[in-house]
Image 1: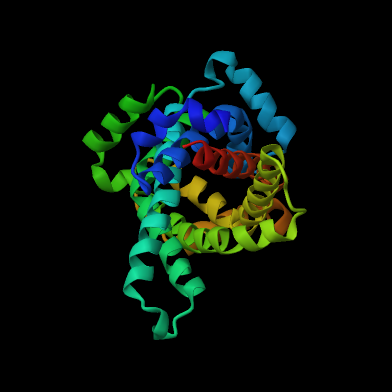
Image 2 (image 1 turned 90 degrees about the vertical axis):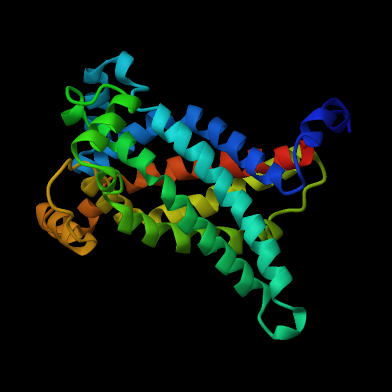
Length: 289
């Protein structure tokens, strides 16, 4: 009750559906600040196929001043894409459910799944931020690209807009289905958890629900993220098909599934933490606003 009385100005500034965008954005900001160093270790494992200890050693050799190098792109990208993910999902669901009458015979689950896929596809428009983040995190490009603005200028002036969207295909393949599964399973999973009787209990349930889903989806789509990282670490040259990049990585790593999934255990724990934070913060903020 006290939180509702203390923040009427926050809710008043937002439209009923606009708050989904705001809550998603703030939830993503909280998550990025906590998990960015873990993401850097994971990225090195995806790119080079090294063990976690070696990836941490690389970051230690890069020095503390480079630990948060590349923070701005994921901060801008995630705060925007998670806002789009939750906000557009609500908007698309509202529009589609209005258009599809209850007597049409189309289940609500199908309509909401389509809304989730549309929201995921729309997120891909902001992929250039992922592209720049990849280049800034790759130590091989430390001497060439200085910061976010410099990297964008260099890519656009030397190669054009198309270069900013290198690695788009695996992102599109990943975003739609993962959104459908996330929004489709979020409710059913929470229903299986012990019923919460307090705000803290709801917070824990939302964290567990988001974390379990995020971790499972992270493992399921991990090879696509490996392909994306490899494709986006290249600057200039031919745009290679997604399947060709995957087969190159497969051959380089000796045709080993274990090597292809190198870093997946860390991705599992990072996704568990990240999506737990995002889901719990989002649901908490919805109640506050």
